[in-house]
Length: 367
Image (cartoon, rainbow, N blue to C red; front, side, top):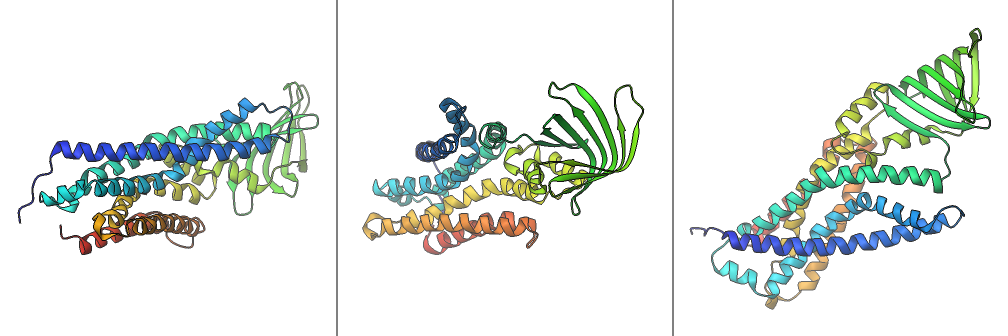
């Protein structure tokens, strides 16, 4: 039987209806997330007297775009289920099917819309969220964690800043042996409380041990003094290996567009960028995951009202959404620990969900 062309006006209507439902549900979920995050931040800020409530509210807003991206797949799924259920209740889908249009033609506008939402999330929302979450972590370190040490990674190597009783220290390492945690090509700059330079120390290597740095083959230079050479020098620190790795390996703080270059920087300096690689592949798979959510929503929502069981089917769709979320988190954990291939861990949830949804639709629908 010859298929009818899908009217452009009907395409805009279905896509517009879905976008309205998606925006409403996304704003509602973001409001709930912001409320709970702000309450938690207020609880943590209550321990200190110098953290104003306006700052806490601002920190909640800085954190919202990044945390909100975690609930976007649910917003895509639930809004699709509601849209299909709404159109079924109004017999709009029945009328469209009676006009000779297939289920794939009906799904086309909404599938394309969800795919575009995924593209926008990856290319625009993620970079914006990475910028704000970086500001949030800086405020959190200063006001809630009271950290005095800061870590940065660049193409020039690793930079560390820590405060001491009598001043401040900036440490630079050209390369890092991440397995043994040995830093090489070391430069250490010392400053007093007024940030006036006091001395420089060059070392061939440094090892981070429990509560201290151990430098080898050291040359110390003070202004207007002769250099001093030492075989071994130690310096206390409150940093741990985990603190350093977590401070610059947090994928959420790196924009999608900056991930490839940052991954290359980590590899060149000796760190394992597996977490960043996993995050990058997961972001690339997001549009396909959103597309699969529409197919799953269609599986549980394309039912005439007379068949009954609508809410049971919607509950099944919701359960499938949570199963995909937990399966995705589990596979990402396996991929980040080198247990399974990176591409399999990142792309399997989206591909499997899409295949399951398409298979169910083809077997149930006659379109």
